[in-house]
Image (cartoon, rainbow, N blue to C red; front, side, top):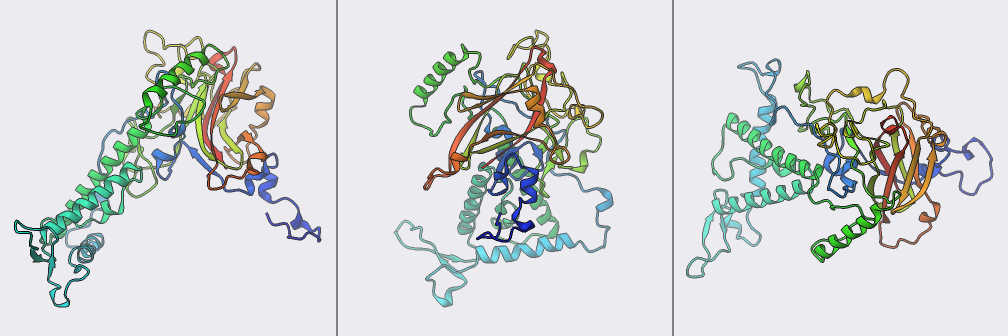
Length: 456
């Protein structure tokens, strides 16, 4: 905030800003660029921006996942009320059909650099024939050139999807008739468009499932984040396993717990775009709505153990956590039937499988009536890089639960002004391992839900 440069004045503008008055206990967040991870939807790149994407796995590999599956896949059938009557003008079909020739003409028929001015209809290919000579082919109809460009675009599109970017421009605009070498009708063009989008969304969902699962995650929780691949992985895993075995002997060891689960989640790919497929949960009474609005969160209690995550590139020494202390007690399905921290599920399977889902469990959000009262002996531990740095008793913990605005309360996890004074040079900050846990003799009655982490 600019308070007038050289001072003087002493007017109203010299006081704290509205943001600083709202967040008066940690006003630095009003003067730096904040970033974050969360579970609410819609989100851009949902598989990369989720809170689960930075979680560390328990020693047995468990991480909370979205157990909800879509009741059906693919693109929705057009509602009959939106169908263009026969004989009427279909503006969308015209736009699709007229866009394709322009896309093709710029990518296929353009003459190569260095070609003679009179040879626009031909291109020279660099591939030698049996005698080492060059061959000629007509530019617009050059099947080999078109095929090569098509394969290149497909590879680029696949690479973007692997990065979690969702549907790419190549997926949306790639000419469908390049390989065929002849124009398609409007109906055929639309069918081709649907097939392309279907394949692209399937690839995107595979990327989402891989990101949401345990594949590629460290098998155990460690203090320092993993920084490389391919070198000494076997020895590193051995050291991690040994370290975990040692740390588990200490009840205060910051080892990721097995008792956290995701609830109130929506099935599908919920990025808020026109190509999203969201909310097709089993049991939904309006599968076709595609509503992206979701308020998911990681729910845990005093039997859940540590929730451990690696917050990347912390430069200003600020980490805040949005939590809900008003969720219903005994509402974590993961710990149902448990009698101790990280206990095994009961023999009948209650609490097993990990990860809640939406499942109609909106009562845990405590939207109506008085919130559940946390037990008086409840304690909230905060750990930074494997060491417990603070323990909040119930009174202090609840003092942070005052909503800054509707349904929004923040707890400070790290607020260290010395971080901002460091000379980071070309570095983007430092990765920080954050752990939080609840403790109470009342077990599942001490329940909270974590939905966002903000940092700078």
